[in-house]
Image 1: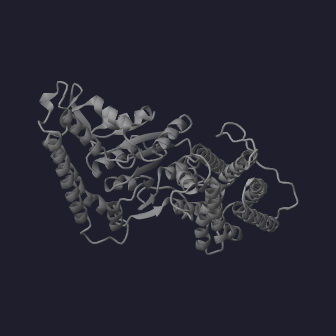
Image 2: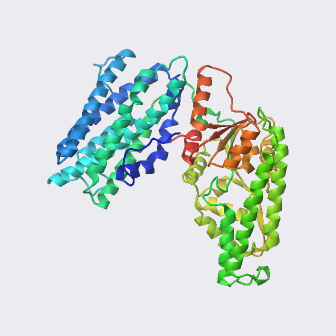
Image 3: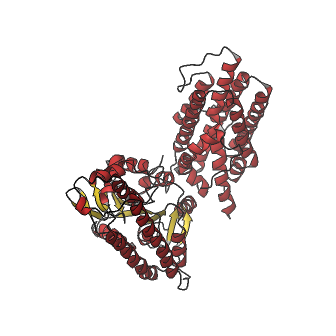
Amino acid sequence: MAVVAMAVEEGSPAKRFWIRSQKEAVFAAYTPFFVCLAAGGLELETFRNFISQDVYFLKAFAKAYEIAEECADDDDAKAPIRELSQAILEDLKMHDSVIQEWGLDPTKEIISNPATTRYTDFLMETASGKVDGGKGPVKIVTPFEKTKIAAYTVGAMTPCMRLDAYLGKELQLYIKQDENGHPYKRWIENCSCKCSEDAAAQIEELLDKLSVSLTGEELEVIGKLYYQAMELQIEFFSAQLVGQPAVVPLTKFHDSKHQLVVFSDFDLTCTVVDSSAILAEIAILIASKGDHSGADRFITQMSSSEMRNSWNILSRQYTEEYEQCIESLLSSEEVKAFDYVHLQENLHLLSDFEKRANSWVVDSGLLKGMNLDDVRKAGEHLILQDGCAKFFQKLVKLKEFLNVNLHVLSYCWCADLIRSVFSSVGCLNDLSIHSNEFAYEGSISTGEIVRKMESPLDKVETFKSIINKLGNNERYLSVYIGDSVGDLLCLLEADIGIVVGSSTSLRRVGKHFGVSFVPLFPGLVNKQRQLDRQESFAWKGLSGVLYTVSSWSEIQAFILGA
């Protein structure tokens, strides 16, 4: 999904808070309510209920602005608060019009649902000085303390304004695409208009102004309020009851009687750094210490600088020949339609290269003498992509209620490194790891690799083998998450292939053989339209379509929900 441009200066509190929270914003977008709304098939009764709850929100905002204006200590702060308050009153008038248009009585008392109440209670408590992040209720005695209340209150409102602008901008794309006229066009246009973005920018500027005189501890309080408000707003969208079938979250759309099989690559899909670089650093560290704990006969007698130089030479050689290999793959004529057979045939070239590259490493002797404990410690501290651990942890927790299998498929030279990583986040016992292994004598590596998975062809054969073991009578849905050309065959074989990262070579090779790369959220909106029209609908492998995401938060939002 597109990231809304911020109209505040670099490093300002409002910008920092949004950057910290914006990956969470996708959880609001991936709710059944929002996907059905974007697709244009949201049931009228669901929309009516949402509008009535939104009015309750707006009334709470109007009251909070009154309190904030009263607490603000100068006209420079009071003026924008009044403007924002006036905009809320205009929105309420617009909502009255929309309510009448959709058959609701604007004079009828609105009863808030629990999710709405949780946010509005939180906002009113914040405005009254009851701030959990601080040291109890704030006593309003001095003008400065009143200003602090204004800052806290605005901090609890800002994420809602920014999230609404973010979602409104996303919805605008879909009313333009709808040739038959989007049924909720008028409401969406109001939410996505420039004034909505301007209001979000204005309250962010106000938050920055009110934060100038606050201490670091008080800014932390606002940060906690901002994040809590964002969570409550996501909860609000998740709580909108949708009676119709929805494609999200996948675990609810998918029949729980049938298996959900989730596969993931490891290097640069789950991790920030390639595991080969981590193993190289362990080897160099051992050489620098010169203490091999009885493993001398497995050690290549090099200084740490010589070893680093050798690793760098191997790394450059790998990169250069890999790029040459990719160019060779692209030398044939580009196909006009998806052609899996020719893609698989051509990937033999890459497979042969990957095996040769592993032989270079083994022959160099650079993997000799590593202690298993050092490898495990490195795994415990290896940094995962933001949101990756959370996804696996949540999926593991849901295994009690879901018929799900988890597999990691990797070229990594050392499966013990992968095991340590997933053990450190509490998931090792609930997933199967398919990778190469170090050969050890005792607990010391001999420099050999037990080669089990070296190429795209090895990966896809393992993938097929796992699926085939489910049996012909087992109904299943497969998801593969990967980032590179090495994952391409598995991504295409899976019912749902999800691409993380921005690998240029993956996209170039894929497109050359007719693969389409579709951002996940627009892809889900199109799937929802098919579902709404009661067209034949199924997630199916070898469709030639892969779905791209910008973060693991998107993957979690799609598969598991908020």
